[in-house]
Length: 324
Image 1 (spheres, rainbow, N blue to C red):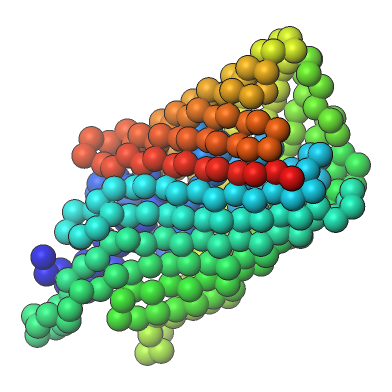
Image 2: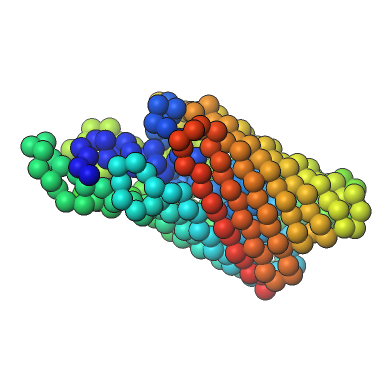
């Protein structure tokens, strides 16, 4: 199928959003959707809330979680399948791999890689001549550092992002900061405990896909806060509530507020069932479901994201982790 270049770009950006919806439902399209998509199945199943403890994909969710675990090393990988986009061949897919190393009791170092792609378009120039197939994709290389100070912890991240539209490309550098406070350094098996945090992510340098473009583009910058509340009913049964809000502040013409809500039931802290909902004032919304297994060394989580608009694509996200 032949698609004009402008429509190709719009379709790609719409298709790479966290919950792909019909085009008319999205008010403004932000660039580099790779930076918004959840790569952790637990977080995704809780409505996208990423202000709680993380057991996988730590660098992209909560790097400080490693400093409160008995593990010295944690690695994880995930795959997110988002289906086909009308007018394109292939299917949209997101992959990530991360690793974290705890240095003593107070410090942690992290590295990660993300890739978003899988679609192919046939584009034409202004004379309606075919330019051949184009395969847009984005990837990022990221580093992070986490510090623990008793019940308080903080982290900083930096990343290099490369975006390829097939016939044009751009790159930029991003930065992020976050801080968390835990009611307990070691979460009790019974009773109430909580975790609260705040983040500022995707602060970036400007970039252009072509030198002649006048206006620079920027990554989707957001600041947000949220947390998790846990209650141990007994040694075996545990309930959790999660909530968070992300305020996308820049670029100004695509600013919005994304709200995340989720609940979790876990049995012996090994098996978990989750449900959630997320709503972005930009027009994206949907329900989420998930299951998880967290053993001493291995973790497996799955999430299903169902958009609330008919005709939109649902997506599946699977995460596997190992702790040593």
